[in-house]
Length: 462
Image 1 (cartoon, rainbow, N blue to C red):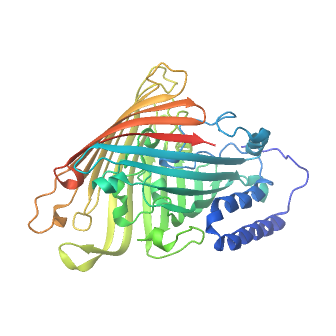
Image 2: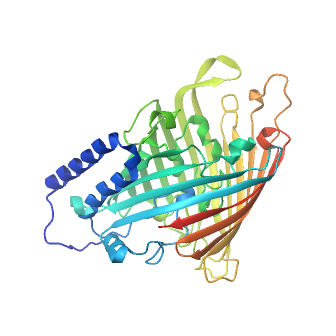
Image 3: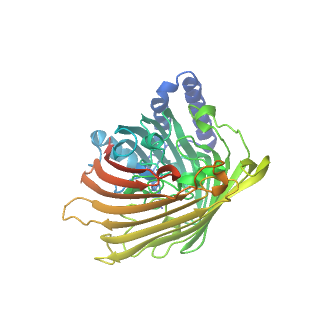
């Protein structure tokens, strides 16, 4: 964590803070009338910060689900190269830029609905900066990410509870999240404030990059029941994380509720408050690794050895909720979840090749939440194919159950929806990821229909 001075001339703290505030204010004023230049202007403002940042190895992974990185990018991991060495020089000074394109192209090759190709596309730009030297103290970081996304939502078209794509939501072009993070005591205490999504960090599937359908490709799908925020329409939030002992952590956050986030904050530029504070907490046990180093989503490096992650969490919303059994709106709603991810077998006890398993279950009150229970289970084989590049094979299962209290009068009882996925992840080039997939669904939307979906995910790092 020791840094060396790269330039004998540095700004005093007061001058630095003034420069930062001036740059950010100018950028926001400009963007207010030109939301179409969102990504460009965010990056220009952050390039200003980059000129004063210095090296730090602890930035870590900051993206969630399908956006997270399976492998380190390295000097040859980008389609546009190293910008003549400028990207490497910035990284050495603590500045990391990332620009990527992800697409899920999925066909319902068998269903009651007419066959249809749905392509969901996302361009995301991200910057992470170590601001330790900039403000004269270690352990301070800044993160910001913006995106454009759009396309066809196959899950909505088929009426599924389990979305075939972990990315699909609403067409948008916006600032997703930003935060300032401070770490103390060798990362045993961490505080974060800004605009970020609870589902990026709580109830998130640890092996999400290895799956495509939601919830296994992002976070537990019915966390929406008590309006736990998701990306990209993140809301203002504060989080505190504590690691009291080597393999154990506690974390908790408070966020602003927003029941219509895409409508209220279309650009994501101005933090908005449209509801009550929602609180989410989680405790975790991390055998085989330091709890301070564990992130919400794993990668090839973190899955080496016989490591695991065991979590229990809860979210609570004190707001008003409708109930099918009463004309009076009920105060308060909550959800409980249990999750486990564990390496089962390794060819080399210190390597990543082998089998991993994951399991998750959640529950919320059936008199307030229609989709009140969800279960997921999965198995992943790391490096099963004799290729020189990274690859995995994964099979996942999702069970969605609906509360009978929400059954329409006189209607047939709900059936439990089941979803199964098998995919193969291939990383043939450092900047290219391909992931063909086939999915099967029974009792679509709680009824008797079935569906088969085939397609693939493509990811390009620029």
